[in-house]
Image (cartoon, rainbow, N blue to C red; front, side, top):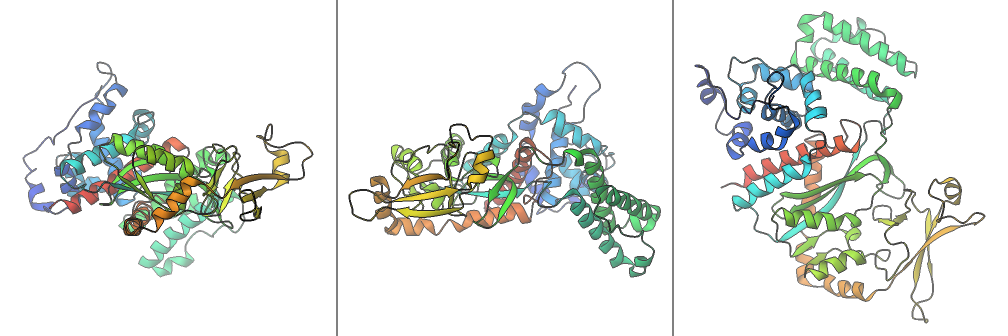
Length: 483
């Protein structure tokens, strides 16, 4: 049974909030900006209306998750801080004397209440609606790009993550008392996960035993983070490889294992759409979805600003049908005419190569044909034939006994010739100057709100993480732009 609890149940001491939480406090501003009752409406069907004890307020539980994203802390620490931090209590709708939840409730809320809900689109739609209502969005352009997030299990192994977390904890202790170096449990020097888990558990117990040391905030946060990592590793390390994550390429020589979040954002830096995919997906094919979602969220689009990945023929055709201009420079690889299997092979702009349906990057390319001699020139992309021989998708793609597997792309296209002419206009050059804004937004998501790495396994959890991070940065931007 769900308790709506939309407003603070004020005690005789609630007037303290007006004295202690400043008017310019971020959490106060967010509470004043948005009515969180839409969370109750969205999740009401996830609770039994007439059976069982009254559940914790869905709005409060959601606000706990939002606080985790804003301040990048663990479940344990966000609950602990809400015990004594009046701004957290105020934001969560608690009276000053009210007790906090058990941290384990947050895990249950994520798994039982938020599962299967389209939180990503719900939260983006809410913030975009507020921005439109406040008159913040005036431009008719969206800037598009993709940012990658590493899987929890890569590039670091579970052992490496544990070592990094225990190192941070030791450093926090040494800052308080450098003499503790000789008294700490002996570090594990063997590259075995079980040994590292045993060492981390011993380190936890040792620091926990010193009640004065373990209650120092700088030490306590690192200790709780290590405990959370140990518990998660013990539960998942046998199946630690993220089944939904895939290998993507940042350049021809560097790769990552994880996810991509494809974003659309206005010139005012309000994110209007997001699509989360596995890491191997190309950027260009996601543009139609980003455009459709942005428009459904109330954004009028006359111009799309992006990099070379978005100038594929399909995207130019879709944009032309809606009288939308794409401000994105062409590359020879994207400037193709008709090409076979266009829906299967994606162009990776960072590596300058095509990626096959199995996610394998071409290993080299060559130009075929002579200019102005009867037929168009093409780029031929060569794939690693040894991978093709054992690929699970080889049927219909690789011919047994073949010595090469290639993919050809014609260079010339009438549509792209028109785009080439558009590139030389003052309008194109002026709009292209706004593209840096989305790169700055990606940096904010990663460096301020922890979006550089997935905090849980699976694409559904990545979507939830993206929803909260994007909701946070949009709210912060709206607050900054309100007169």
